[in-house]
Image (spheres, rainbow, N blue to C red):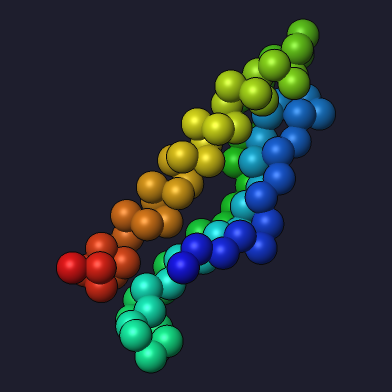
Length: 81
């Protein structure tokens, strides 16, 4: 199960993402076998001329990287085997 309590992008000066994401591996009875949480604010690009266009490219890439980081944790991978 993956939950997002926060996922925002900011394009004021630089392109940034703010996130708080949790992954849990549960057994049949709902017991948590493994859990991983990541949260931060990261700059993922910049464009002084067209920040929305820069965000349209950078944010999906950042989302994929964060999801890979969240689900690729050793404890998550081990619980899924």
